Length: 159
Image (cartoon, rainbow, N blue to C red):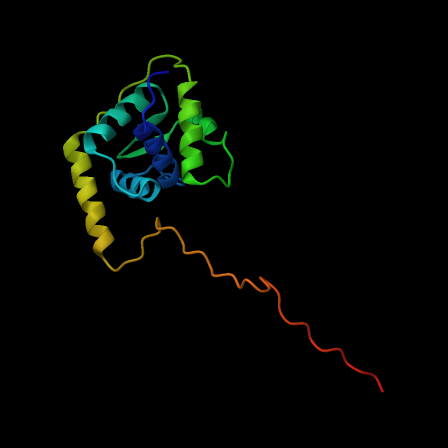
């Protein structure tokens, strides 16, 4: 393909997470990027990643949103389902490096100003008290003595 950067794999995974039922808007993609990476990637790197992935036929623009192409969906389903983000990113980078371009695809032009506005909107939404669905859920504390078990009931004596 081309030299695969970390931002390309992060962007592909962010679009996959944020566009489950409908094409994702830029703010949703930025929120998923923040969830995956722990911080938002730079705007110039994201502009280059949008261009690279779109010219290789992995993402497409649908109206005002962005979605994965069928080729990208097959790449995304190649990994383990229960893998954490680091394993997924490593597998995505390996799959992207082995991907060969087939045909010409139109480039998606996302400007730095659009991404800056989306980052600012995401930062503002993080400060609100509303519930953000893209935040990881806390794991329950498990009792170390007997996880998932209760005390057995005493047996009934028959007289």
